[in-house]
Length: 245
Image 1 (cartoon, rainbow, N blue to C red):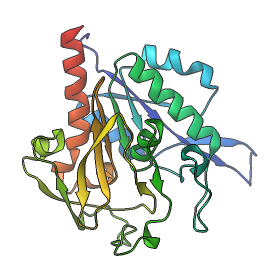
Image 2: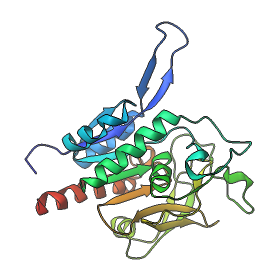
Image 3: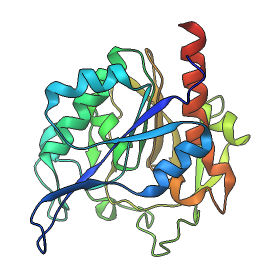
Image 4: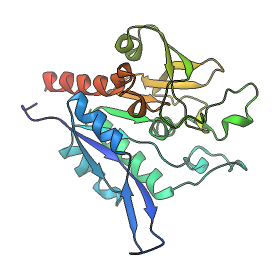
């Protein structure tokens, strides 16, 4: 790799304007980009576009960050919609899954956060719980504190990248989701769980570097610097790829 910062491509969501200029806007939280930059990367963003472009995006960027957003369409894992399913975006689902496979084909690292964690699992053939509150003994995973404060405990698998980065296996995370990983995709392994048994993080079993986390580290790292860990791991993975190139 060159002396330039590695380029990390961030996925975005679509929002439709209903006043003023009637158009579709693309965007995501600024804190994703801030965390990537602080960890040493150069954040770039991509709108939801034609899937035929994903190969070129993968070729000119060094890593992919799949961000949070609306629910994942249950049709992608062969399920019918739950009564409490939220908004879905078929175009975004298809584009992000295509991006995921394009980056993996080139051996480039992928980080997924919240929805992005779920997209990774579905892309690998896994399934999702569509509405966590409907599960018996489920914890509250849609916390009311909107500042990103880590409020519930998560157990990290010993020997996992996350356990190494945090320097411990017991951490506290924030939680802003009502979907969650159910059956883990064949190419992945679960490396973190909440006390009610939900999968909170996944890594790849083989092939190029993949990490998905269910919480929002980009919302927590300013007050809790240890939560920059997923972004630092992504940049460390890029250094390792560069060293092998």
